[in-house]
Amino acid sequence: MKKFTLLSNRTGSLFMAPAAALVGAFVIAPFFWIIFVSFTNRTLLGKTAVNPEFVGLDNYIALFDPSNFFTRGQFGFSLILTIQFVLFSAIIGQAVLGLLLAWLMQAVPKPVKSLTETAVIGAWILPEVVIGFAWFAFLDYDNGTMNEILTSLGLPRGDWLLDYPFWVIVFFNTWRGAAFSMMLFNSAFSSIPPSYFQAADVAGASSWQKFRDIALPLVRGHVVTDLILITMWTFNVFTPYLLTKGGPSYRTEVLSIYTYRIAFRDFEFGKGAAVGVVIMFINLAFALIYLRVARKKAAGEAQ
Amino acid sequence: MKLGFRQYVSRIGFSAFAAILGAVFALPLIWFLFAPFNARAELGLATPDPFTLQNFAAVFENSFAIRALLNSLIQSVGGVVLVGGAATLAAYALSRSAMPGKGAVTYVLLLFSSVVSGSAAMVPIFLIISAMGLIDSHLAVILVFAGGLLPTGMFILRDFIDGIPRSYEESAMVAGASPVQAFFDVALPVIRPGIVVVVVWAFVNIWGSFLIPFILLRSEDLMPASVAIYSFYSEAGTPVVTLLAAYALIYSLPVIALYLFVSWKFGFRFFGGIKA
Image (tube, rainbow over all chains, first blue to last red; front, side, top):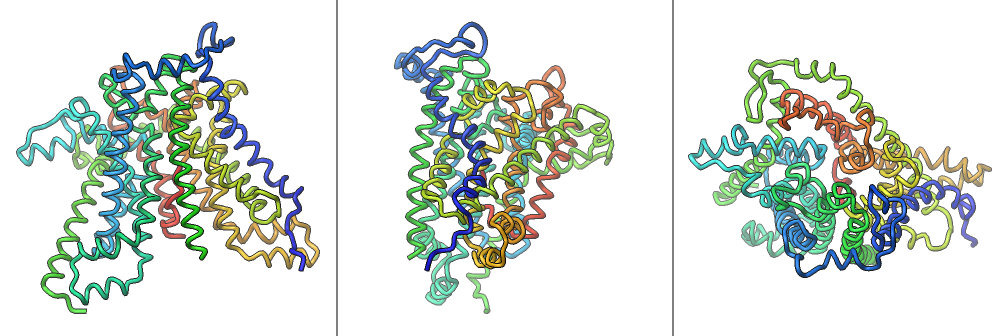
């Protein structure tokens, strides 16, 4: 029997046209444009803004200059800082906390569950500037809630944003993003047949044993998905800017803030583009891994 | 089932631990529930004393702040209409036509959209918008958000449409409807829940976003609330806490309302995996 097609190719392409135009102009074209700009000395102002010159690999050579690669405020410093930021706030912070929260949510009474979930999801969905300001107030030296709590416990106050800026953005990003991992693991755990756990209960297994021997092996695929996604998002996140503006003295200048400073504060678009290209290739590596994993999983489910 | 002593203790332990974690998450947010109603709000946590709505009144008298909310609305609604419309048409075509390479298109789009995102995208997007002569316009913000959110929106909707039997439209066409009529009169009502999901998701994303308008806009009277909120800082760089807190609450309300709507209507689970 001939398969009945609902849309002819012509009507189909017509339906595709608006999306194709938008994605072409604002997703595909930027990819190639930024590679081109990264080989020029384009600036925002001055002579080279209109007539940028081709400078070959100069921008890249400047980024990877070994003499100042690890100096604060330079590309290498930002890159390493970003890797640490992703490691601590996404891979350790968000994933572990999300997993823990999802596991706890299986066992606690409904009111505790819904209140905790509301707070965690609230941290995730509220606009980033609001969250940024709430944390600014939370950490304030004189009146902030954090120092009030420490004082009432008889502990010394801290000027967190000044003394431990890196750990502040790590905790901030962990707090902000844990909701995603929690929800992902929540749905993973709820897809496990309850009979597995009932059997373990009968055998007298502890909660930790059930977690380690039943739940964790069964959600391994979700763990991989979660780690790739939160790594990609955290790697690109600009929100720490709202808390520290990259300071003090570049100590929280992750790559997104570094790019912003080079391109929009120092007006060096060529160099900013080169940073962008490096970021894009790192993103590409993660995206390819992700699509591979997702595809494998889809194929596994179809069988 | 009767609980043994050990299970009973561990139940309580779990609940206490979950409650503590919840409190840790709530702590930075609680300030933001009290301060807007406090006439003398500072950065510290305090119950409103005296309780007042004066801060909100002051915000509503500030025409700049109100216009910023309106700008947020223009940019979000504009972006949402484009994303919703274009994603629906494209996802339908990807699902129902026999065009070659449909699967590849979806994968390539998802790949590009995760590669060209956030920090990598700001320089080329600025240059493209500037080459189009659109710097400092609502349209710039709307188009950039639409382009950036479309691949994921198409992906979600395509999944959704693939799950709907084709027989609805087929019988309409056997009865003499054109493909376009079958789409608008038969398919569209069925896929509406999927569109609602994409639209809400896109709205929340645009409404809360800071970086794109921050880069693309210059004029104060085009700034959305996410950028304009920084006008509640004094010349010395210290925040005017009372007004800022009240404004932050007003600015957050649509997001909270949409979240409540979605979790009431669909449950919140679907949101997994689709936050840009």
